Image (cartoon, rainbow, N blue to C red; front, side):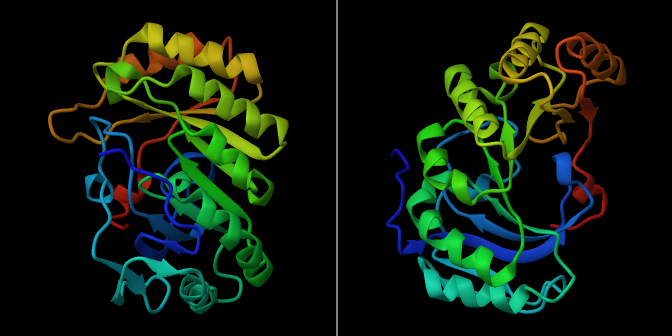
Length: 257
């Protein structure tokens, strides 16, 4: 069954919690995470398979960082989510709000209503983590975003192919002058030709957009690349995109969400 954009006044959530960002450009910063349910991708390496479908209940942290979760039924009305965010938003704690998933852009209509008041309430930057394959939905909420992390899916690793959609998505971010970076999951099965094509795609929009190579956390038979592979691939794409950083999932090293 194809996932659809949900009704705009409610959202199907997985959880709301406070944690340290473990991936990409904002690694190490404290974020208030709003994890949306539903995803229309089926990446082989996915460590959030539980988000592919919407649960009956979502879990909400009572106190930021304490993991004292309480459970509430889905879908969640906009005013209720606003109240949860306000409760989490302690002074000087969070650097930004992370919209993650699942695929948050399946809730683009909801986000278009939610983001203006939540920005006003918290005064926090809004960061979107997305599979980068829904440029039309991105355009609906781009004016309310401060930062975007786009996952570029390599067919040899993810099993998904979205070259054109990734190009359009990235171009929209660049044209809107929001902070944007590209994250590419790499495994021992990564096809170097796909990495080369990815670098050409990014450089075609702007060579100043950073690329983060993220060695996959071994899961379900998908194995991480060797150190030699990582060094070779980084060197291969740096002539096209100078900012190529290798960052694993550091939140898993910290044993946190």
